[in-house]
Image 1 (cartoon, rainbow, N blue to C red):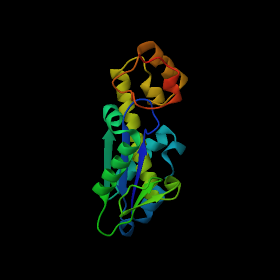
Image 2 (cartoon, rainbow, N blue to C red):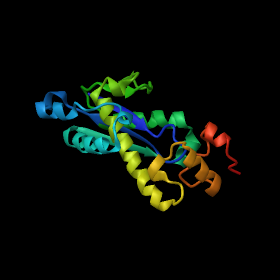
Image 3 (cartoon, rainbow, N blue to C red):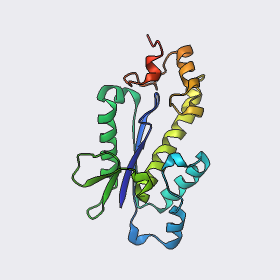
Length: 192
């Protein structure tokens, strides 16, 4: 069973990160199943529990793929096209001949993949991919906080918050900001 999900689709800054996880259900031990029992949509976990699950997933999964797409790439290709391509690429990297491939909510245009609405709550593989994508992206944004002082990326990890919008008004945009993103938060700002 392979599952794919993404993190960062709705953020103003930072990469879009897609991940795919393959579990060989026939090789999982009872202790593995117990360890994965806490899986759910990554947004339902605290950062501490997500970090712990990240290591558990990497230990238990047969294969893991992480695809990252930067802000300029998102701006040039468009968010939706970039998102679908990243999810498709991640799934293809973990897929095997006899596995079922699932993506969270998005039909990928790949006959071997099936979209599952609310998949991160219905599939352990999708939930695991959600955790891998979110934890990878959040770690990146926490490191980016040092390279781009004043934006507080470690706190909001690039999403639209009052503090983030205030930092954009004060500092302008950084190289991590997506300029093509049609967000109400951007419409309220003068980015010129």
